[in-house]
Length: 366
Ligand code: NAP
Ligand code: ZN
Image 1 (cartoon, protein in one colour):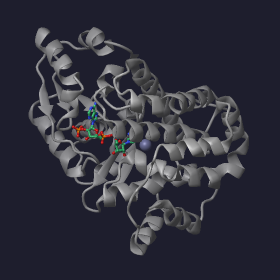
Image 2: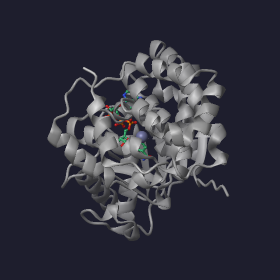
Image 3: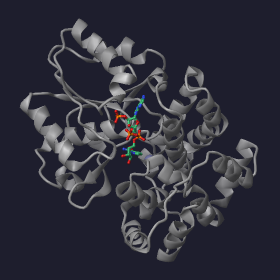
């Protein structure tokens, strides 16, 4: 049997925010706008929203303290601000970091959570409505029930999920991604590619999602390099945004696998971007899983009209590198963390410690 569920109303395309946001708000709403330092402004989302709110007499507050790899202490601060100002909706604008933070703020405020409560699913019983406006094409968080917040006590990235964290509305306008740099465009698209591939690897894969997975991977494979050389091409941006959305819709059903778990320690410890951390391990993980998911991967490569090795050549041509040697302590701690991570139940095979250790050892191509 196959199942598929997301409860988010998704608006996609040029001016979708400008043309539709006012219809979902009235003067009784008081949103908290959650952003990073710059992206909401440089992408143009913030000015579009504030114009709509000002024209419709909608009051709002702004919390712009979200950093990359958002911290638990920061989302608690945002939730206090939300409650103190009697807000009732959270709008996340940005990449995955501000949108994941908006979800966390909604849950912390909705349940008056303390300390590390967000990581305990039983404590999540309600949430304020979340609106997601992505300015990157990568995480797909606008279509998932997940959030990833760094636990400030342990300095570890930790994901958590609840159906209450699906955004109520998501607005995806590719023009908001035109300001992304070449490297962030690459890394975020590689994150989306990871989600789509992991949708195929996951024990929870199902046939409903295969058209999204195959077509999403095709969009990235055929258009990423072109986009990196034509950053302001809106048609190309639209293709990457669609692939990213499909990636989110897929992992909302399948979860992610070890490919994601293995990247988290590198991001927490060394600040390597989330997409890059997934990308450098992609070939090794595919090789490890290949015998088990061979039928689906062969079908994928036939669909792309290439052989597996050409896919690896393409990946290599993206120049995904981490110029850093990983020391033994880091590798041993990370192996333990990966083995105990939630995503491991989704792997198509039972992964052994040594296989993870080997991937870390092969990781760095200096
Ligand atoms: P991000 O951490 O949100 O942003 C990365 C950088 O890009 C920041 O410097 C940001 O600036 C900048 N930026 C964003 N949009 C921009 C734009 N349009 N123009 C110029 N600069 C822009 O990156 P992300 O890759 O989208 O999100 C990664 C996070 O999402 C990770 O924490 C990851 O674990 C999480 N994630 C969540 C899910 C999920 O389902 N919940 C899935 C995958 C990944 P500012 O600092 O100014 O914002
Ligand atoms: Zn991801």
